[in-house]
Length: 380
Image (tube, rainbow, N blue to C red; front, side, top):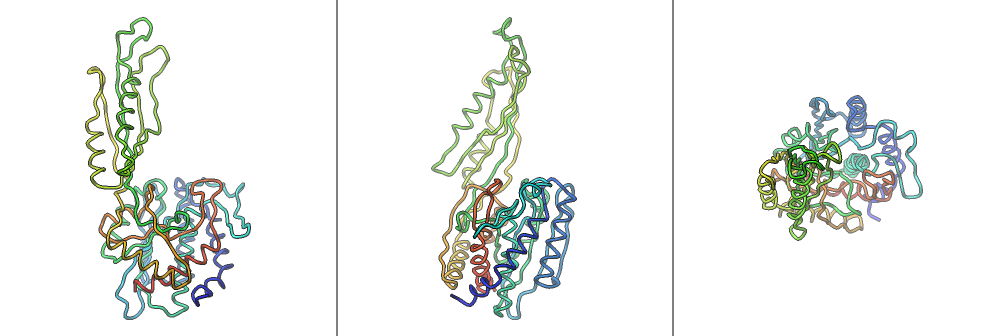
């Protein structure tokens, strides 16, 4: 067993205790007061584990969680710089802990937010501690901690982009995909379609009026037909609503669409699709709105080199690590779009994001913390 791996194994119980305390601070995305308490805990935890930061700044998130930017200087002679992205909000409502407390069963630790993504922060902090204990060189490190990732990062996106500018690399401690590091993510779009029809009596005047539902049904077929799985493009009309009574031709129908793409070319094609949506009947009217919530995170040559370093770090502790492309998005998408190499999914090994069976592997916490310690050394 490598010295780093042994060091991490010896700290197993402490890491579990840290993660347990963190999970027990509930941080739902929609509760500003709870988020404030959660961020205060996180800042205190980082400072307690790593010492007083070289600099720290809090950005007001408005109705959303605030964003903390926490800086630590690199070791003497180090020229590298790394930004660490960790969101502290979860999808779980305040009070979830009452009927789902943190529990450990063998190698599995469960609790709301354990996998997505509270274990990630604990691993990042301990990785730095391990590197320091082994007197390894460390790059300049900037933590960016946001509390609105689970709702699309509306307040934190510009803060993340500004905070990451000029850094050599970004490490995102979102959960892994079956232990694999995410080197490519799709871009995500959220679009709304509204159809305005003409109401009329469906029985007395079947030849009058224009059903917005009928028009929407035609548009849904068009939207779904634009999917291209070979190109990595999916379009899903997830919600539909319309009409007032069964005997009234619907005057309005609404639909919300989730879009995932793997390239800018497909993003442009989907934009053209939505811009060209039109009603079948000239008396009806179609409105389209929405935006791309996350740009595409493509696997660049720089990201490939960064992943190669992660493989080397894994080899130093006697394990192998693989990479994967996923359909989900994260804050890493923003940074990758700036041309900064990104490794995502460096967080928990486990399963069940956003589900009641959410769990993390304690063994994975130990391995990932040791791996990242060596990765930091290489990025110094």
